[in-house]
Image 1 (cartoon, rainbow, N blue to C red):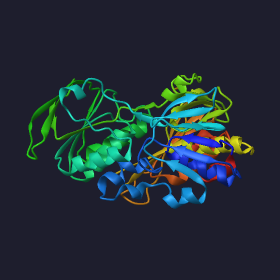
Image 2 (image 1 turned 180 degrees about the vertical axis):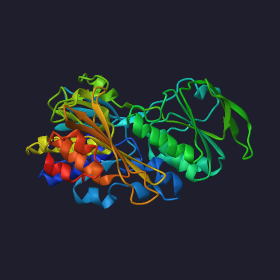
Image 3 (image 1 turned 45 degrees about the vertical axis):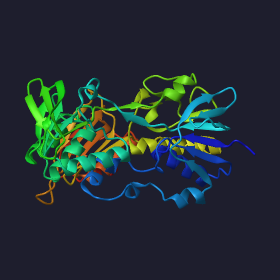
Image 4 (image 1 turned 90 degrees about the horizontal axis):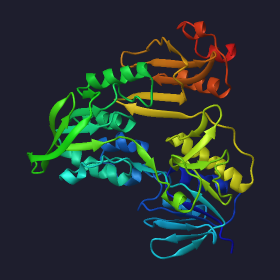
Length: 417
C-alpha cells in the first residue's frame, strides 16, 4: 500500500487540506497527526464569544468526527511527531512509532510568544492559543474582578472586550504608543482605542513592564498579581493575560534541514526546499506578489488559501488564483476588517461613511499606491470592505476625489475602475 499523504498538525490549514484533497480527487492514503487532544477547531472565537459563554469545546469544532471518517482521513490526536527522516521518508513519533510518507505536509501552526522571566516569580500567566488555554482563562475570569492584559494586539484587545462585557475591570499595558499598531493604521487604531475607553478599559500605552510579582491572597483565596509598569505605576489584578504575538512551530523543519527564515519558507505552491514536503498556515513564510518576499500571514484566510494551493499541487490540479490577504476582529459587537497589506509610503484616504443607525461606527480607510487600491481597513462597513477586496485583487485604479466623496456610491467605484 502507498504511504500516501501525511499531515502534521490539526488546525484550520490541516482540516482544509484534508477536505480539499478529497474534493480534488485524491483517493490515496491520508493521515493526520496532531499533538493536541482535540479534532481541528476554530481559533478566532476563543478570544471572543467562547470567553463570554459556557459552551463546550465541541462548539468550536471545524468538522464533526464523522466527517473525517467519511473522507477516509485517519486522525490521531494527542500524538507528537518528534523527527523527520527525509532519507527514509518517514516520521518518528513520540510513542516510538515510525510512519512512512509519500508526501508530507507540515501544518504545525504557531504558539503564543511567552513573557520571559515572569513565570519564575510564582505568577500564573494566561496565554491564549488553544481551546485548553481558553477553557482555563474562562474559568479564571469567572472569579476575577480585575484583569491585566499585556499586549494591545488582536488577542489582547479581543480579550479586553470580552472581559469588559463580563463586568470585569480591565487594564491593558502596551509598549507601543497606540493599540493594534502592527495590524492597522493610526485612524482605525484611534477608533478602537476610543471604543475601549468608552467601555471602561484602562489603556496604558508606551508602557513597558518592569516587574510582575505574586501579591497577597485575594477574596477568592488565590494570589493577587502585582504589576509595575513604566509610566503607569503599580497595579493589582486577579488574573493576567499575555498577548504579545506568536512564534511559528518550525522545529521539525529546522531539524530536517529545510530552508527556514522567520518561518518555514515555501514557494508559490507551498512546497518547501524538499520537493516531497509542503508546509501551510501560520508556520510558513511565502513570497506573494505584490506583497514581496518572506511574507508571513497569521490568519484563517491564509491557512485556507494555502491549504487549497497545496492540495491542488498534490492532486495534480491547476493552482488557484492568488487571494487577497484579509483579517477580521469582533469587539463590542463591532466588526473590524482589513484587506491587503499597506506600506508606509501609501497615500492614506479616509472615506466618509454615513451610519444608518446610532450604534454603528462605520469607518473605512483606503491605502492607495499610484492610485491603485493596495489595502483597506473598515469598521462596520462590509460593503466598502467587499468592494475594496475586488479592487485590490484586480489592481484597479480609482480616482481619489471620487473615493473621498461620500455621495459617490462605493459600488460605483467598481464600474469606474
